[in-house]
Length: 297
Image (cartoon, rainbow, N blue to C red; front, top):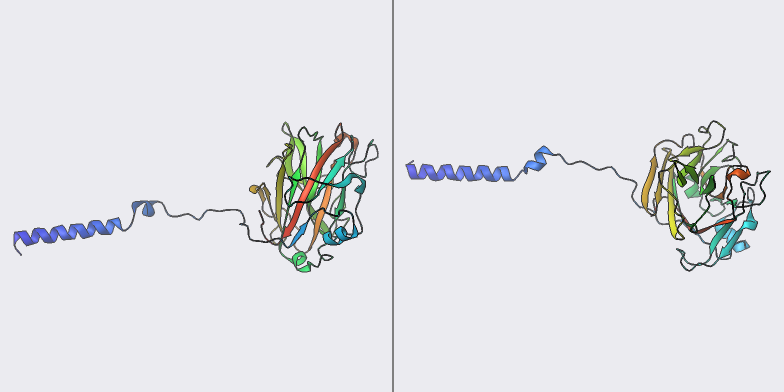
């Protein structure tokens, strides 16, 4: 091979080598691709929705599958119109009297709040009750200038027998209500107040989970809260206005064999004495409840 041919051949080989290197980017060799971890993705259409049109009537009770036992405080619940509410239609206004607390309070000057239970089997949703996971989403509004008092309850999910899911009466039941609680200089810290058969606080009541992971807003606007409870793993995930704010793995222990029962609509200040309550009468508003086997957002 003469000098000219040899030079051309060497140039061609160099070009091929350069092309081969370009086919494998340096960044791909030195920085392997990672699979990011993320919250459960939205995957479930609502299997049930609950509004407050015709609140208190037999038709409304049937649509909500309300249970016959465990309810109290109905006098402080009222359906009112709110054109800004998600889902449309009337919303539920809850009144909390000055100094009010739970219905077990013996020194409270005024009543306030209340609760009722829904039942998935009554609603014909036994498959949802027996499923591994259940997602509850609803909207809540607190007026500007709210007096938060010391702390209070907000609706969540429950499973098992009514009367054994809260209130220090641990048995074949569990619940995942929310609370607002004053701590670290803020009166509006959010948390999950967790009851399970195997997990209770030093007083035999619930456990504060995720205290301060988010804050409830008293701004006169509607906000959504959503919780996904997985009975199989004991995981609890919470979203506030569609943003994940809390994820706990395995903390809801001992509930795998206890089916979902439905919504524990429970809201009051406390606690069980007047020290928990507000100095003046307060209100909160609730709307657009829904349940799904998967994340909603």
